[in-house]
Length: 447
Image (cartoon, rainbow, N blue to C red):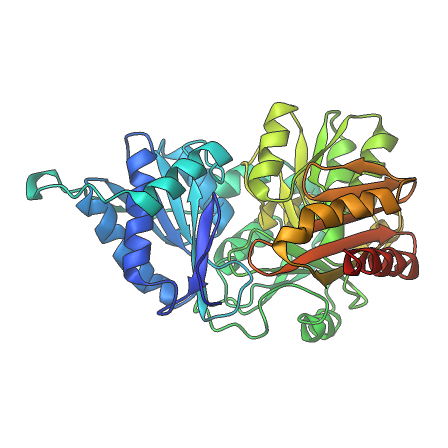
């Protein structure tokens, strides 16, 4: 990466190269300039570079007169909960999510405890690019408060979404792969509160990842073996900031991230009726479940902030992203692995079924994801060509171009960082999904 990747909700880069203390201070000061009055919650995931960035950002915020509430190493959804719980003006989470150790990043939260929406994010970005920090004199410097109990508020909200006693009676054996990220401490506390017999891999929050941090099948091969060796009923796998959750069944089978939101949504819909939201690159399993339950289903553009916007606009009772990110508005407006763990254990207890059987009962699809080389200036023509070529599909331009047929779909979106488009297809078989991607590549190569 030769440049910072900056979006309306944050930035990320390689520490010491594109992401420096100066960048972090200026970006935090830009956020402070447009946020409402009040303290800003400051947290980080477990990456060692986070210590340096916390120090820089805290100094920058104090230097522009902002009080800060430092919560130390915490999961991203915990930061969202605490922003709201403490009545803060916003929050800053230092995390690079699933990126490798050389990376870190900054994610911004609004006073509502959610990733900042587009309007506010654009103001921050403009201030960062063109503005100057408004340094204050010594008598106006901000203060720094350290919060001791950073978990209880989040834990209580998660427990309130399930029937803990029902789960406790089952005494589930659970393996949690925290991978030395931020999720281990609250993960243990939640699972033990639910009466589980817990094995945790990588519980220490030192950022020394035992495997590549993105919770994909390839990266979790060793964890799959560990689940069966531990005799666990279920395996849970978090990314470093614990906002994503992948699932492994008792046989060591990687069920994966796409199933997390669908399985959670099915359980929520057993007990409540209301709209459901996922983004346009997520599996249609959740859409099928919503239609089966007779509730409205809405699709958003890709990105957590867009999902939350759609959830709020449509008064959704549940939502999320297919990368393993369930969002339960009763807990917070942030992707939350702890919500996922609690809901899936509650579903297993209620239905008296193993997680593998529950996953097998869902509508079955296969997703294929590919990249296609295409210069940025050719993307509009390329999408028009695809729309003409696949004239029998229902076209949606909410985010790139999504083409829908009964039981299958194709999404083509331009990359913000590379001269490529990403093509994602889902169909009843992997071969059919691959065919859609291959056909799209042929059309785009002719543009």
